[in-house]
Amino acid sequence: MHSSAEHQGGSASGQGLKPEYNDIWQRVCQGLRSVITPQEFETWFAPLDMRLEESQAVIRVPNLFFAEWIKDHYRKLLQQAVDDALGKTVPVVFERSLNHIGPKPVSHELLEPSFRHTPLNPRYTFDRFVAGPCNELALAACQAVADNPGKMYNPLFIFGGAGLGKTHLMTATGNHILDRFGEHRVHFCTSEAFTNELIQAVRFDGIDSFRDKYRQVDCLLLDDIQFLSGRERTQDEFFHTFNALYEAGKQIILTSDKMPREIPGLEKRLRSRFEWGLLADLQPPDEETKVAILQEKAAEQGMELSREVCFYLARQPESNVRVLEGYLTRLIAVSRFRGEEVTIDLVKQVITPLVEERQVSLEEVLKVVASHYGVKVSDLKSSSKTRKITHPRQVAMYLARQLTKASYPEIGRAFGNKDHSTVVKGVKKLKLLLEEDPAVAENVKAVERIIRNGESLS
Image (tube, rainbow, N blue to C red; front, side):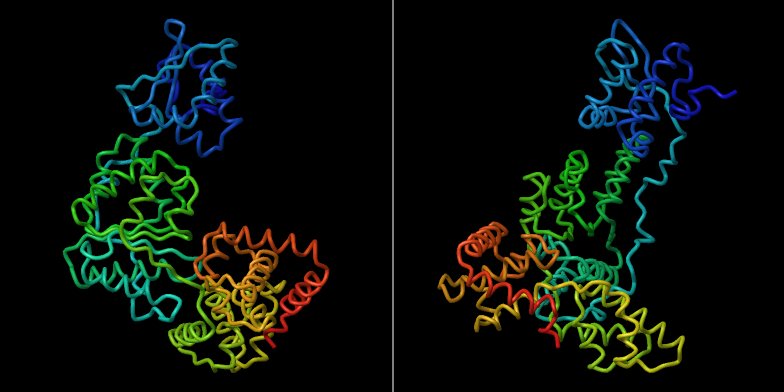
């Protein structure tokens, strides 16, 4: 019969301890398992054990960094679990174990710097990136950085919504640097991978190797930096990594779905550093750019699409580049399977089931409202304070919030990079007006019907 320790504690937790200590630790583990995720438990508590000494509970940890992480993130939960296991309150202290506790560590060789096989997608190059008004600043900045890494726009912070090409541009920059400067060490990773690698380094006492790896690069590409939000220890480690690279004149490129100041839980000292260089945004592509992207992607797969087909696809709701690629992949597969030419009829057969409910885009709201009120889309995006412009702008902001899934910051960017607080105020003012003026309310409802029915696309 297996002991409870084999099932409830770490794989080696409690070895060599007095039986009563082991039993107490297993009760502590049971309490922790009930309030944290299995992954959290396996990462931070399975490698530990505990003993009682002079009216205190001594928790043995692999290293100091490990203890600090637990103190910062799980102090109250651990204390409560110990109190419950003992039936009384006993102070918890930490002690570094001279011997490794818990599962056998991974080889430290895995944490050593290695840049021979940098995971850069070779398909992401500047030649394959379709340029347009929506991305020309970001593209130009990336090309400048690729020609002079560490000397222009450092750091380079690329931000924009999903599927707009952030990762493509960043990876293309890395590929260009590798082609032009063969001796440069370029490292790409996501912020999630950075965090997980840091956890493993801390857990298995490989923090020095981790730091050497990231601070010896010539160009660091970190994707989706917004996922560092709220992760204090990871932010602290990246802060020092950033400083080391920046002071050494090494290139740093970051991507995010938001501007630095819009990322919640991001430390002020990191936010200020992200804004030292250039902030380059990617806006949703216009129809012409979408058509060009579709034709380019189709050509890569050996197929030619008519402009009629491309425009039909580009006008579908939620048609960011990633969604368009999905539509195109499915369309080409069906066309080849059936041996049929890609026509509008085939496109409708293939795409309609994918669009269960019509989604409205921010561009559509802007176009319909502008047309309805006899102003230009550029007027709605301007800073004009005249009544002729401010009222339609507030209507557009309100309908954008009602009919799309866009956040206030996303709406603000679509309206000429306005602050999200401006959008909030505009929406509130329009709501009050709708309650006070039935004529305005009816007018806005008419615009809403046009947008919901997709009449602007016909």
